[in-house]
Image 1 (cartoon, rainbow, N blue to C red):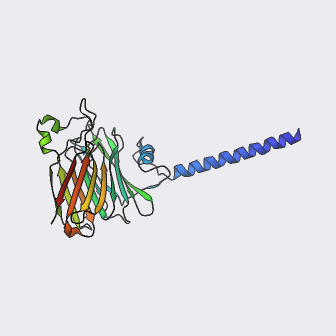
Image 2 (cartoon, helix red, strand yellow):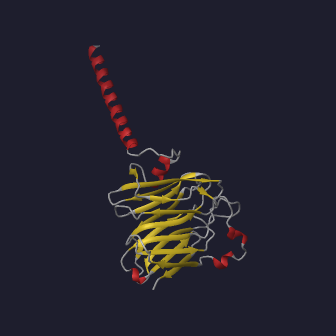
Image 3 (cartoon, rainbow, N blue to C red):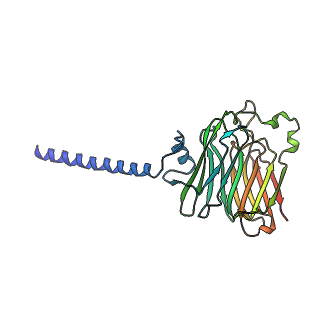
Length: 271
């Protein structure tokens, strides 16, 4: 009887130790993610969804996310990710809108260039916190956040393109240029708008039709400088702005795009 009691106590001790270890590991995992100052219900979910579980995450003043306080037009909300003060090499940039039906906006990956800034208009379905996550060379994600108040409905509003019976004639037309910024660390600024309805698939009888892939290439060698993936939250007729620092800028740039219908658009900018 005494031996059974000793065995039972040993098992209980082992169980308590195991539970304590598990609880300790859980606390450590949760503690690695800082609290959200905006208290968004999607904070932890979107971090795991877009950055992956167990990643090192921190709020950072080096990621300057610029959006309006109020979205006057919910279908065209300007967003700028200013990385001119980021103190490390940028490996990846991911942006999302917490409460959009499709939160993801874009993922940008530099390959043979340094990125100093990215700007793109987006749709917003309701008042929401917007995020920009930047991965540095040590594998740490730096988060910039801002809140946009909005009347909403931007993701479910039909595009103006749908009212034009000749919209296909202008599909993929691009207007843009390269600039040399007067100040700041970037040596090249690309600013370009492409005509595309960017349909979200959330309007009755209108399927999703949007640009999905973007590549920046050296215009002479066609070497890839950076890639970008887009989601349905991007605005109709998107306007892209990239501030870059790279070799061979005198060769000019080629902007290449493909939508989910298989259409390919390409434009050469520079010399």
